[in-house]
Image (cartoon, rainbow over all chains, first blue to last red; front, side, top):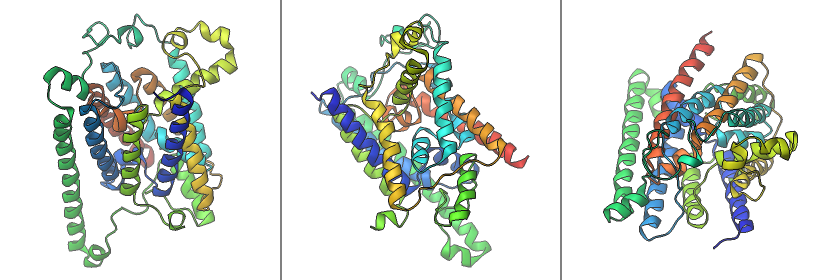
Length: 238
Length: 164
């Protein structure tokens, strides 16, 4: 069993590596959703899907052999409502939880401002929490279906394995196939788009970049693009 | 080093992160950011308002008791540190300040909505995509539906703001 200090050290090493890789790759979770919807650009979406495929196989694989630490988590409509608000917020702020930390590390004051207000939002809404009223928390986290607390009961790959006796990896493979199908759909869409562009201008087709250039970045990005012009060395997130 | 000269392919970056996340899942738990940020909010409130005042708010005694001995905080701090090191080594560190009032307003509203969303759902975008959904948790599917719908609405608002 790993000690608390060990957990914190492992978390810091993991976080630092993630920060470095995300900074170098300019990957952004907000862009993975926003760019696919607004600009039909899938650079970040494809990377997200690849990660989810690896994770699905890895997590369910380890769960099958009785390893790993799945989140003991209650399920309720609060997850839908909360992430709906989060989704609007991340597009408006131009940063999600990852990119706000990564951009802050690069010296982006806008991202630091987003983080500050994220923490203020968290605290202010914590005042409204009550364990007898929705949204539910600890008191309803029993794992039993509880309609009053909008809980549908606990269900994930581990509980599926326990209830059905089928190894979790089997369910994982089904989810992997679904994610792969989505990934291939995106590749096909990109190919169609490139061909369409090529028909208009063959020159473009030959040099068609995988990513759409000069993507306007909301809020924080506007400032980044502004100062990028000044220094000339900064590569836009795309 | 080439890593600090050219932009890394995000698929390679995310594949490495995913493998590390599987390792983290085995030793402590999957990658998450919202939990660490919630704890940081509690710690900040403890220093600003004092421990006695905070004890009167049920959320900070029943759900999250502010403590620095919480591994998720260090993922967030690590991400800031790793990005700072990468930015300095690749000469991409410089202060960037939003110039227009409209940007400040959008970032402020966006930040508040993200905070409220995390508090309400007990998850963030990272635990949705990199934790719950790969664990095949029903909450993950609900969260993915929520975040996609929210991003769609956000994109619509953003487009309107751009056009205006």
